[in-house]
Length: 166
Image (cartoon, rainbow, N blue to C red; front, side, top):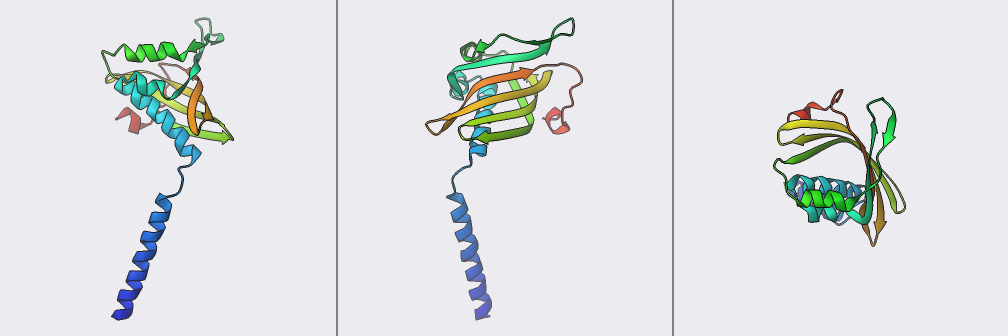
């Protein structure tokens, strides 16, 4: 019986020691980059322009890739992030909820790219879907978005059930 208690005690100490060591490990850059993207959309949903602003560099640019009415591929002019931040800060009549999936993150040194699919909802109503590509830079140990380009479509969206049933 004494041996069983000693073995159990050693096992518990080992488990607690491993868990304590893991909790002290630094957060990976992949997790940090993902947290910036999540914070952007949490702030957007909350209508909190300061939270949104804090995810971008001050000179960040936004663009949309789309097809015009004649079916020609287009890329919108770059829009400064300040316009988007002002839009968020003006307040919303309906909640703006952008749901993400298939998030892929690649990092090399101080440059990161994030590619994901999204579905955008105004209040409870579906608005559009597409893909987003974020470019981030790491400065002073912080990841910030410096460029965001998206696509937008209202049909042929393959949205996972978990997001449709949010």
